[in-house]
Image 1 (tube, rainbow, N blue to C red):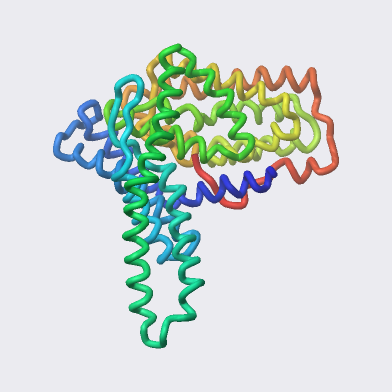
Image 2 (tube, rainbow, N blue to C red):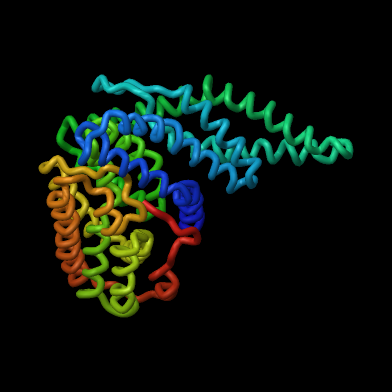
Length: 365
């Protein structure tokens, strides 16, 4: 099951990672040119909305389709994604409304549209007369794209908007009650099960993008991507662990904190589940600090390394962001060290394979 979850997370990351440059470009445009940015510019700030609402989801849909059925699948994925982008809008209980960035929708319909055209080709290609292959390829893609775009607009768009409403209202509810730091509990559980990319890019990313388009930053970009808790956990294993876990921790710290590959610390929790209390302590403390200082990033840091954090930290936000990261590391280290002293790791057969396991597909935050 863990392998399947890992593969699923890797597949979702594979739709986002090739387009990270576009995300960073959007984050920089936002950080510089919106009214609250470093160098406000009304004309250039007009790029922010179209890029986040249209370009980025369609790029993800194209990439997801291409992963299934090469360029032909990518075209179908892009067309289907355009349908749900146009067909989705939301209105939260708080009164906020607009067009949510359909990252999650693109991750669903992009591969699905490619799979459909692949099955259509499998069924019909052998029946195409010689000399009519180009005609078939062109019109089959055009007709199917016509259908998928309409279905996306009428059916999938409203469905994905309803999902965005649900998540958005839940986050609004947590925020209104002052309980946003507690969101770290399900986030860390999902991360350990290799659902980090689904949580980050599918749920928190669109919410953060909507915030950042208005204010230039969002706390949602900080919730899942924070490298502090993982740093503290690995440092605790280095200090108070034993055996292979202790020996492998320094190298894992470099990969995690500087390389941004958070998956490296998941096996350290899976082999000793009580250690999830360590990352909970770090994550909750960091989120309390982020809320108290109204901290936020201008875009999703990807991969989730300290260097990526610095690249998307808006002007004036460096202190609260870095304070939260390193406070999380300290809290996770203290709690993790105490847990390892009280409940030492027991070396088991297979631990060597678990520690240091990397995802089959490189993933980003």
